[in-house]
Image 1 (cartoon, rainbow over the protein chains, first blue to last red):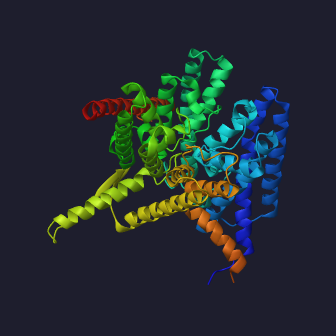
Image 2: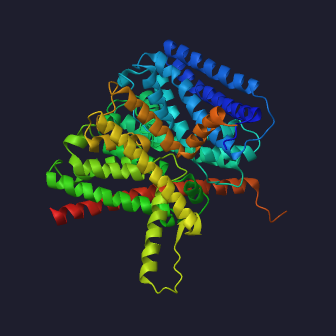
Image 3: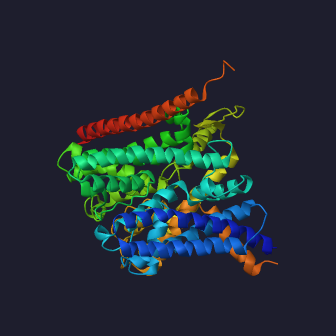
Length: 500
Length: 48
């Protein structure tokens, strides 16, 4: 029997969703200040309207939903996915009012892409977007990378019991410190320190390339946000290809690989456990799969003689594959080059790299390195059991912050989420193919959306079918929140309608 | 009391740890990129 949620359940969900939306409104003050600083008055008005909408919704919901009840696990999941939904709807207002979007659906696509750190976009005339809106686009992806709920946890939530449940609902389930609020603050400390250093390096490099100081540091900040969050947004339509500079690319690679690491691993490294990067199952898994995919594509493109020398070939292949594997989405080739130059092998290997994705509890998406590590260890364990005497006890363990023995429950959990991702990738690829796109290209684009990567082989365009825009938007949302909290939201809706 | 670390010293140690952590992470990534480059060049040379 499905139990219909009681009034108290609606109130507690409404109250905490309202808090998160107030956080989104406060976040919009940064692009508002940017607009004012650059005398972009129309853009400033757009942000004032959007901030007002967030505040009315956020405070209005909290006023209507007064309760002292704390969050349960199911409430936490519903608040996390519901907050992302409303944050997208309201966060899209500045995009829509800017006049750069073809429709409200396009803006929802772009904002969901930002929050989920995907990087696909439908915004038109990107090279002439106002600084305020560009700041909002990149801030969306930076904030989304840490998690919208992490922002609210850091600044707006009191108490920790319920807060942890929302935090888990957002797809982050590791405590860097015993207290979840302290964990949220540690995540911000890591991100903001990298923000300062990354912007400095990119800004200085931009100036060395001839940009003025303001432009160099502003673009450095935006490119950092796109790289660290593994979002892949950049202020130019040519993405990081626009810079044509190996120095800029090296800095970006360091930032987006570091951004794809688990926050727990960053914290371990920062607190003296320097061997963690070498022992962690996620980094081992990531470095092995990235090396293998790079070597395969390098070999095939060398055969095809696409690039003039080994350095050019490696530079292009490694950058695109590292970007794909970390689910960043930065590129230094044209979208259609994946099809016209890289061919089926390049397209499929890049799709596999995107599908595997980055680390758990990071800014990245995809199936995640830890699940690949657990599944690989389980495979090794089964093979060892098969070739060992029946009486022998074979146990495998993996290292992630601490050593953990492999259990059936862990393997089942990893397999369940992996199958969910593969099913989602498959459904989207078939829908794309039904619209007439070649299957491998449809699979590439769907995997890119659902693993929150953002590389495109040319399908994502403002004139693509509306249903495909909706499918990709839902795919980004499901992929980022790792299914469970979105399923909880759907279950909540069903319980409201059909519960007794 | 005399054995307790002074708060400033603890903070200084903490900042040093953070800085060393970032440098270690960055160098590890760069070193691995270099290794991937060497492997790719060898792969091209061997299989071409």
